[in-house]
Image (cartoon, rainbow, N blue to C red; front, side, top):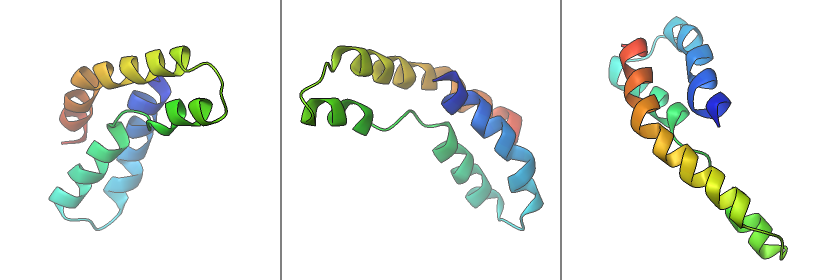
Length: 78
């Protein structure tokens, strides 16, 4: 979760800065990179009749952590 919400966007900042992107496109890309994990991580175990409690907890934690990580990434990227 921390890797997806924080580390990947931080690694992408220097790469995206090298591209000739308008500022609003650059910041939009950063928002998408800092968004929580896909809900497919909960749907797949449900479709295969597996336990969905742990993936659901991870999805909830990832979503809650975005309250902090998205503004942080936008501040660092800006």
